Image 1 (cartoon, helix red, strand yellow):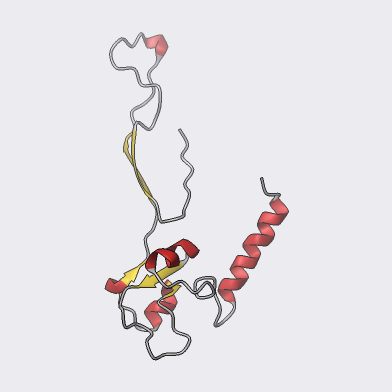
Image 2: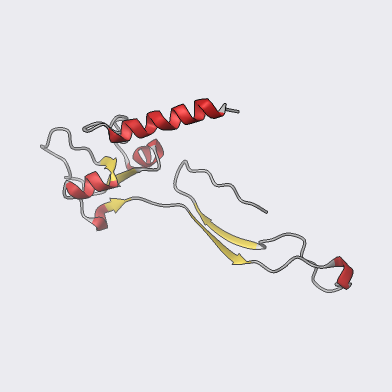
Length: 126
């Protein structure tokens, strides 16, 4: 368990890294594969064009999405998965007092579809 003060300090430091020109958390780790890049931080994106950045000093295939687009990576070559939660089935809970004898629903939602970005966590309220 992290103390709230430490968590706030850590978030501030990460934000500072993202705002310092020429340096961000995505480029600072030296990721050389898409998987490594996407594991660095949720703000990182990967340019799948194999020749992207070749011959240009300081240009990395792993960077912030906006930086990659500004440097010429096309949207079709950009890997930037996002996490999604979709509720498929969400029937109301059964009312025991109503004498439900058929299908009893004791948990909701009953069916969900989750897509997670690599390394990202999701809390689900049941």
